[in-house]
Length: 239
Image (cartoon, rainbow, N blue to C red; front, side, top):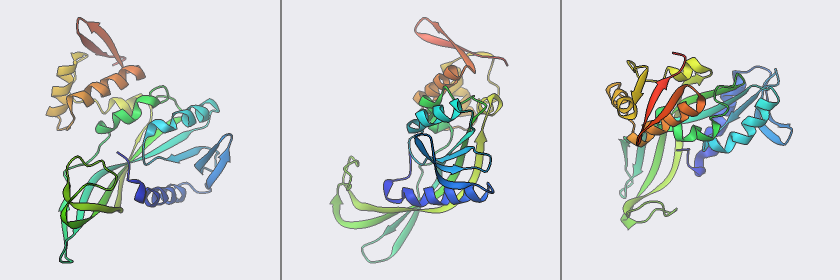
C-alpha cells in the first residue's frame, strides 16, 4: 500500500515540509522519550508521517496518548496513478493505472490502531496523492527485480515520483468515522446488507475488506456484533 522504498523519502519530505509550514513554530526530528518524532508543534504535540504500514506506529501512538499528547498520523493514499513507460525507440508512453486507494481500502492498516482511533488525542489525516510510476520497456519478458511479479513482462519498474499532493481528510472522533458508513444503513443488519449498500453507494470494495471494516468498527465500539449461528448480526451503537 505504501510508496515504494526507492522514492519513499521524496513523499515523506514533501509531506513533512507541508505540515511544518501549516504549523507555525514547529520543529523537525525531535527526540521525545524513546522516540524521534517527525514534527513537534509549538504546543508540544506530535505529527508523524507514515508512508507505509500504519501498524508499525501502534506502540508510538500508545506512548504519546499515555503522555496526554495529541498525535496526528499523516497517511498518504495513492488515489491517482499514471504509468510512464520509456519505449525501446526512446519515446515515452503515458497511461492511467486503474489501481487507486481510498480510506475504505485501508482498513487493514487500522487493525493495530483500533484501541486508539477514538482517543481524543488521536488524529488521522489521509492525503490524496497522485504519482507517476516509471517503467523501462525491455526487449524480452523479464521478472521484476524484487521478484514480486508473478508473471514475466516486457518492462521493468525504474522508479516512482510524486506528481501532486491533493486534498487532506481528517478523522477524529465518532462522527467522522460513522460518516464513512453507507447511507441508508439500518440500525440492525448483516454483512451481506452492508456489502450491498457499499456497492450501491459506489464504494469499490471486496467482500473481505467490507468484513474487515465491520471488524474494525466493532473493535472501536461503534458497532455491536452478535453471533447468530454461523454469521453475525450487527447493530449500530448510540445511533
